[in-house]
Length: 292
Image (cartoon, rainbow, N blue to C red; front, side, top):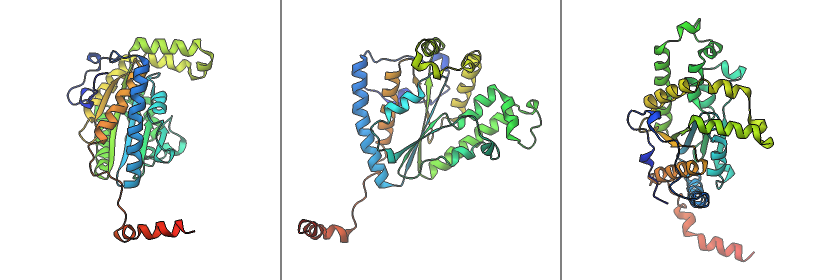
């Protein structure tokens, strides 16, 4: 299987989603893709142990994508070899009554990973410039000063939100959070096939909602909103990666490879050394235990 480079998928210039592939298989079988992921997972798990011991950085992984893009299964498979104490997953749904009493970033801020841990956002703070942009009436539930009706929500409103999100990410990056943002790029036809499978397979029925079909009708509008969000918020300290996701197994390998390649660049993340006094007495401690 060919070498995967993070730069291939990083949104570093003007991104046009329609021009980007939604399928990749690296000319590899499912078996080879699974094996590649297993090998990368082992290394990521070892890095996570070191990050936990080092305890000066945290890692935030943001995953966005259309319905059926494979967010849940990707999280399950990529982080399978992590120590449970070192990774926390948050799935953000419709804001609760309590969350709506705060600004829109509050619930994301309090869910940020502590130092030494990975945090995974399954759907993220970007829902506030995606779903709410396609459905601006949702903004009315936030009770924002100066916003009295949907007509008050103009381009300036969204530009301000992009600025706020950039400031939020810059702030946490400057305080030790390593940020990755992955957009699972799915084709409309592949989504159709996955929705059909949800209807055909009894064990998958629970995942289906008639609302999925209503949102599907807004596919082009969502693509435009994703495109603008990626272009306005992909920064060196918080880059977006556009991951071809029609092939779930390949998408998982790409995400895992990007994580490992970029995290290896942090040469200062090392297991802490023992205090000199403790180190000088290791033989004595060993002797005490052996003589018990």
